[in-house]
Every structure is written in structure tokens, then in C-alpha cells.
Length: 205
Image (tube, rainbow, N blue to C red; front, side, top):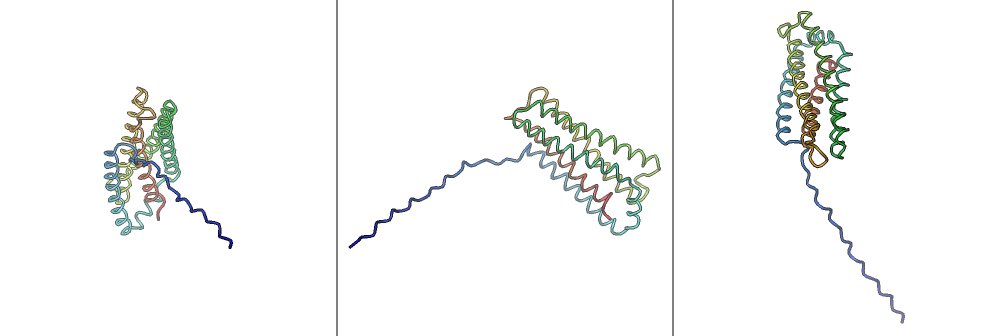
């Protein structure tokens, strides 16, 4: 009688557990709380804007028609470019390329400066035409929201400039660049808010 060849027992496959990676929020946690608070404030303003606009569609459409779209598009591209530059700065600092990171920070400052000049000239033009917060509801919202955001861009540039100065002093490297991540997080928030503003004030009908 021929006996069946005993089958070799299958060995149990052991799965190696990958070492746990501690996930942390990039940048300073306090800045993220500040960012969330700022987004909440802007969110309330946007909601009120939507309600008032729904009640006065003709007035808001006329005010929107009086805005120049080309400078707004340029400002949008400038802030997006600034976000790209600060993201590149974070990547370069993370890989120890400090000098490159510094140059990308300067790129963000350049984009922010161009935004402020272009938007500032738009404000001057509106004030020269006699437009103020009391002109009507559209201009009240436009000047308030755009002006509030303008101040955030100024603050963002102050933060970026402070980080750049610290970088020049040798305070950041691949192991420690939390300050750069913190500045980048704030700048991305400023960019995000502008994208919503651009849609509400210039595009949405």
C-alpha cells in the first residue's frame, strides 16, 4: 500500500509591525488654535454676507460689477505663489537646505509685498471715488472683509520676516524648523481666506 506523502505544515506568516510613527501637527499648536479662531470669525462674516446679499441681490450685483477682476486674479495668483514658496521653504529646511529655504521665504515676502501694493492701490482708488463703509451694504462688506484680510496679510508678512531673520541667525535646521512650519500654516490660512473672498466678492452671482 502506498502511503500518501505527508504534507509539510505551512509556516505561520509573521507580520512585522512597523515602528509606530508619532504624528504631530506641523508648527506650533498655539498657532493652530489661533488659525481656527480666525477661520471661525471669517466664517461668521461670510455667513452674514450671504444673508444680506440674498436680501439685496441687485445692489450686490451692481457693486460686484464695479470691481476690477484682473487685479483680483493677479492677487489670487500672488498669494497662491506665496503659499507655494513657503511650502518649498519648509521642505528645504526639513532637508537641511537652509540657504535655499531662506530664499523661498524671501519669495513669499515678495509675493506678499506685491499683493499689498496692488490691493492697497485698489483701496485708494475706491476711497478717491468717494466710496466708504457707509456708501451701501455691499461696499461696507467689501471694505470690511477685504480690509480685515489685508491686515492678516500684513501680519503674515511680519511673521515670515521674523522667521527669515531667525533663519539668518542660524536658528533653524533639519531637526528644528518648527518656526518655519508655524509661519507656513498661518500663510496658508491667509491664502485660503482670500480664495473664499475672491469667490464671494468677485465671482459669485
